[in-house]
Length: 166
Image (cartoon, rainbow, N blue to C red):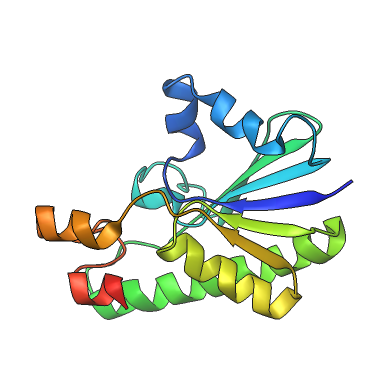
C-alpha cells in the first residue's frame, strides 16, 4: 500500500483539535488508499509559542494506527534578529534531515504539500533528495489575492510580497 508524507503549515495540532477538525487530517488517507499518512507542520511554534517550552525541536502526535502528526519548531525567539534567523535555518535543517530518515524508514511513496509557498518549497527539497514524487495543492490564484490585499499571503514566513512571489 502507498504511504504519504503531507506537509501543511495551516494549523498546528492544538488548533485542529480546538476547531474539532480532525476529519481534515483523517481524510488525507483517501478512504484507506494510503496505508500510512504522516502529516508535518514545519513551523508550528510560529502560531503557538507555548509548544516547545521543553526545548525539543519536534512533537509527535499519534492520531491512530495510520495517522501521525509531527510539529516542528521554527527556532527560538531572540532579541538579536541574526540569532533568530540562524536558529530558524538550523531547526529547519534538522527537520529536513529527520524527515529524510522518516521517508526512508517508512518507505514513503508520495509527498504532498498544502500550499505552494513554504510547504511547497520543503516538499520540493525533500522530493529532490529522496526521489519521491511530489504533489502540490494550489487552492487559489495567489497573485490576484496579493493584488487585492496588498500584503503577503503568509506574512510570518515572507515579510514582503516580492520575496513570497519568487
